Image 1 (cartoon, rainbow, N blue to C red):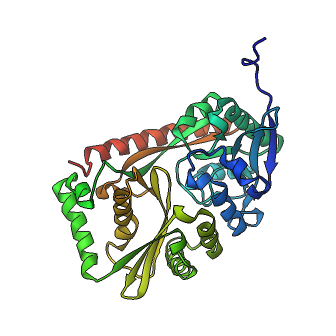
Image 2 (cartoon, rainbow, N blue to C red):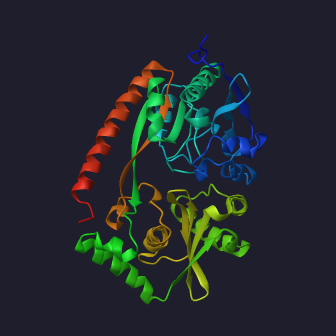
Length: 383
């Protein structure tokens, strides 16, 4: 008898810490080595106390095993007691629940904390679709059995959109701006592809900083010492407190990250003579450079663009990296060569009334994003 058509039998195991599972087991589900879903990155968040019940990120990772006790799928998962640090904004949904006297929190969230980077979320062995379906089913069961308002999977791969849709999840589309390497050999090769006005503008910005005498230092892996992280953290705090008033990441997180991810960590520091004034943290993936956090101790024209965008593009060109993903939002990135890229998240709301309202909201948002992308495409910085 052919058993290949039989429905596999899965079981669920929950983890109160990523360290409850061996790193090598988790990494079998992440063959691309995407840095933000590595055991190391999630462990760094936990060990540095950036996540945990005290921060509103109650750790509740989900693992799916087959009947042979082989790990087939997993997802970084949390019970969330607020909506901060997600970059997929659902505050209006929470307010709607509150208006009729219902609880929106805690909610189920499958995501990488404080990280608006698209990538694998439904991790599975050899792309096992049935195991991914089992994960989605278990999440829905957790929501129903614990009377949670909703479930969310943020910044999923486009390849998993269909899997989620087939299981009845709503898909939300967003926009980010990514830079793509067209086989450039130098930064000037990239500039030559831009329109004359955009090319001159970027050269003007870079030249203005050169005239100030600022210098940029590139540090990777073991070259990053404690003193460098102390400098960067001071810059990070200064900018966070100036704009948002609350830092999600602790000083120890950056030390843990450097220790665990080593040569995947890239740090740019900017100095005025020997005085550090700015820094930007990037992670190096197999095909992309991911710009994550930045900060500055001094307000200077164009400093942000150089530290976060142009230094990253330079590095990508020099190292043959396919693209640079510079984080969430930012129309100002377009004139600097970063183009619109769709992002996706998946959502499940058991309440039929709220689900219908959310569907209408998501459709309107999708149409708005499509219109914005079309307008940008008509004003591309490229020739």
